Length: 299
Length: 292
Image 1 (tube, rainbow over the protein chains, first blue to last red):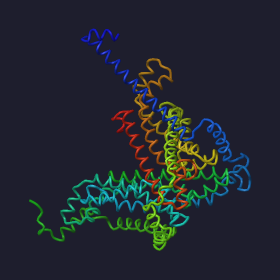
Image 2: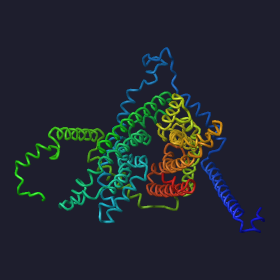
Image 3: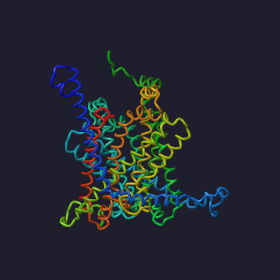
Image 4: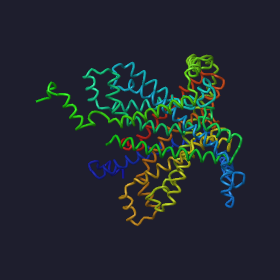
């Protein structure tokens, strides 16, 4: 076939066919190279990550066994009996009261951490918006500070703060607050950068100071968005507050850590189910609130 | 033309106030409600600060005490004895972190494809079955990755396998849900076109649905690879492999300079993976799809 097109280069059909074949060959080669690279990455990843079939074969049955043990033994006849009878829900959840107290504490930690972080982010978001400050120094300094705050995971901050403030919820709240400052500060300043300039001009023309321009020109425009982002962050922080206790930073995580360490199987399933239920409920509530805020803004 | 301010008398203002009360600010009742709510919120915050012992003295103490934040920050900047920092161990752990994220995301994104089909409205019309799968996904992703890691460490022992499994299980929940949504938004016309040729159900899925969904699947999987690289850095804190163990061990012996060094390396690796994933997304699914 190739000889044909070589002899009669002027034939458009043959030229098209040859071009098509070359393109297909090129694409096939690219796919092949990609596939080889991908396979190499999988093999390397499996080797470095110690993900060997033998290990997996040994581990998977143990996972089944472990998760099986966490399932409660419930008997139909005794399902609604009191907490002293084996096989009842009350027996399974005999520590529900103390779990609820801890969950409540965890939620409050998340609320305080989010509010403190959001307040700091609110203040820092104005100097970190390109359209609101003249000085490059102030802008870049605030941006870099926010980056440092958000690029370190909150549990790593918690590890540090546990040293400085001792074991307990204070360390966890501060850790969440710092990380939240960074995460929300970035989002807030992006909202700030999209504001309408005209109200700002108006206040400036009336002789308003920088603070007054921010308060009466920018803030009314951005507040609904800030609230919505803040609530989203609260959902995230409730999740992370439930694991900060692993490193001693307060909340329900500490209880969970003990339960797992001491092999209290049925308590584990009871507590994890409660955490999932609480997180889901709060997510649903916050979703309602967020849509209410954004609806009010639209009207 | 124009407003002559000299002619506006107090009685004009009163009249305007009576005609357009809302133009003169909020009513007395509204203001009361608003300030009341604000006061309530402030009181609640004050209570929280009190309940969690946020005294200025304590906050100050945590800054300046011998193992306070100022000392920690100072030691993070002043690096000592850099010759014996066990770089081999650190870089191996970093590599392991990326490998865990890669393998975990890869397995999750493969398992999530059939599960995504089972959770999609246009594939599984039986309501309660689809509902069951959706709730299963919610359950898997409702449990934090670190909790999964803690559980898997108890089940299969310390090491990266527990971390990979934790990433995998929590991502199967999230990815299946996203995949199901991607399948539900697939264009009907192509599916009907394939069906009209008399194709079997499997062929309809393969040639009608899958070509539309694959770019979305790939893009989501790459996003999760990025996000898992970040979260894999902390799984080691509970012993599930990766750099987290190196960080928490060095914090335990107060080697803050090495902690700072590792954190900087983690940032570099995360940025590298982000760039790589962005480039791959562009290569694989094109500019248009990558933006969406």
